[in-house]
Structures are given as C-alpha cells and as structure tokens.
Image (cartoon, rainbow, N blue to C red; front, side, top):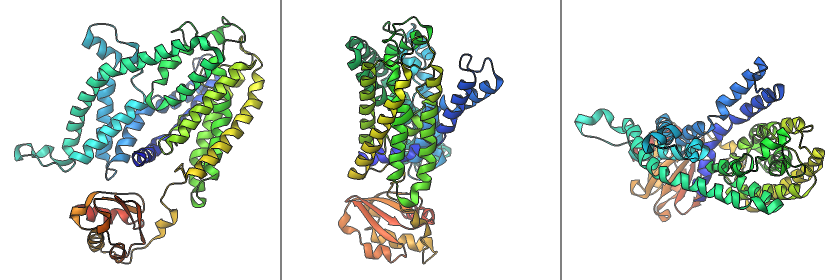
Length: 474
C-alpha cells in the first residue's frame, strides 16, 4: 500500500509543479482589486483569470498526470484515458445531468464533483485500463481497435460503472459530513479545532467543501466568512473558523517546506528548493496550499496526518485567544493585510507571533519525523542523481536486456517491468531465482532489492532502451 501511495505521489509531482505560479498570479490580482476581483482593473482581471485557468482545473491536471505517471511505460495513451474518465465523471455526475436523470433538483453534493479526488480516481482508472488492455488483440473485424486504441473504450465502460456507484455514494458522504459539521457547531473552540483537522484531512477527497459550507457559509446559520466582512456577526466570535488557518498557511507550511529542504539529499537540494520554495511562497502569500500539500501527502501520508493535527491545534488555540482575522480568498498574507480593518477583525496582529511559533513547531516536528522514519519527501527519493552518469559498457540493448532477463530468473519470474530515469523497476515472483552477478555481467551499475518481490537494476540514462527491449522479450 505504501509503495502504491509513493508512486501516486510521484505521479502528482508534474501537475503540482504547475500550481504555485497560478496561486501567486491569482493572489496578486486579488490584491490589486480586492473587492471587484478584476471588475475594476484589467490587470487584476488578467492575472486572476490566468491563475484560475490552472487552479480551477487542478483536478483535470491530476487526472492526466496520475494516468501517465501510474502507467507501466508513462505513455500518453494513458493520459488520454485519464482525460476520458474525467470528462465522463464530471459530465455524468454534474448537477444538470443528475437533475435530468432524476427529474428533481440535484443534491448540492454534485455541485462539488469537480474535485481532486475525482481527478485522481479518473487518472487511476485510466492508468489501470491502459496497463491491463494496451496489448489486447481483437478479432480481425475489430482489429483497428486492438492494442492501445481499445484503452479509451474500456476506460469509458469502467467509468460508467464507477459513476453509477458514486451517484449513490457521493451524496451520502457529503451529507454525512455536513451533518457532522452541524453537530460540532456548538462546541466552541473545540469545534474549531475539530473542523480545522478535518478540513485538512479531507483535502485529497474534495469533501472538505462539505464542512466549509457549514462553517464559512450559511448552511447552519454561522456564515463566518460573510458575517466577518459585512459586520453583521458578533465581535470576538465571528472569524473563529477562519483565523486559525493564518498561522498554518503563512508560517506552518513554509516551516514544513524548510524542513523538507534541509532533509533533502545534497544532490537533490536544488530540485527540492525549486518546488518547495515556490509552494511555500504561494502558501504564505496567497494561502493556496495545494502545491505544498500534494507534494507530500501521498509520498508521506503519516506526515500529512501530522499536518492535519497541527492545523486542528492551531485553530483550537486561536479560537481561545482574543484574535480574529478573515479571508475572502484564503488565509495568506494578502487576505491578512486586507482583513486588518475589517468590521469583525480583533487584534489580528497577534496572529503574527503565533504564526512564528507555529512555523518553528512545524519545522522541528517535520524534520524530526522525516529523518526518524526516513520518509520519502521531495528530494529524498530512492534514485540517486549520480546514476545519470552511468555509462553502459555495451550499447547492444537487446543483448543487455537478454542478460538482465536471464539474471532475473527468466520470463516466468517477472510480473511487471517499469522504469524511471535511471533504473529498471521489476516485480518478480521468486527472489531466490534472481542472480545479481549475472545481471551485473550485462554492464549495469548495480542491483537493488527493496523487497522480496521487487528488483531495481541501475542502468543509467539509457534505461528506456533496455526497458523497451526487455518488454519485447516478455
């Protein structure tokens, strides 16, 4: 399971890398025109729309990225299959379609169907169908649809079945969370902490919108966000369900980013810095946290649980203190500045020293857990950068693949073959049949055995050619 999650996390790295710049553009645009969101400024409108083009379709990027990343050979056909699945999910389960199917107004849950969970699910369906059916041979009459051409067809069929299941399940999950939110409304600061914890924990599923609707809007009569800016709330209470996020988004996650950078492998620090630095700036400036959170939530799920817990604690403590701030967009620096003179603001400056403490706590805890349990956060992946310098002694890739295959115990001992930038990643049945010495005789740099069913062969940057030959032999 952990191996699956880590592979999923790596698959998300490419689409996640697109998010920070989008968040920053939207944040700057919102700062230029905080009331009209572009209605009063062409520059603001341009920046907001440019950023929204990516952030509003983040889940679509996930669908394609996960499909390609989780496929056996990172083929674009899998990405197309992920897109097919996404389009079917979001069309079949849209509010308009559901209303048409049932003849009644759609449940509010279907208004939030375009979320990260659906994107990841679509990507997994696309990748699974690609891996399973890419080599399918059909009768002569249907030969045109053989191989990769049949992947999208199978994906569509699987997605229809999955959509039928979600048609019944999604409203139940969404409704249950709304009811849960209403149940904790009267518990004061404790409820704020519980809300903060589940708000973060549910980010990967998209169901955090259900809780947000209870506390930020008027589903249960709280309307924390609306009352904060209109001045119709109660001073000292209104803003309770927003204030605790500022220390986390402005200081906590940047502290976590610094911890992940400091614990990255030396030769990977520059790569880690580019991703983590942009994500930290995005979180601090605009409060858009997805670039940071999706960078580690699947690579190190236990660490994400820690993050959700720390968020809940922050929301609980801030709710107890005489400090309130709010946001229209998210809990970043821009909204913090804009909320300083809001009608329901109360000692918002106190959030800055609180945030500094939270940042230190995040840094210390993240650094300790990452090093203690050797978590594979960005920059700590297994592949060593110097493997790219490996040079094969023999450029006859077919011959190399044949020797490697023999060393792996033959065709009957191999269940799957994949590759990254420098390594063959092979799943095997019987590890006792693997002959390291034989494999190394092919001129490869080394053999690594992460588990009894997994073998990694360090080939170097020419690994793709060896992998292609090996797959032909299988």
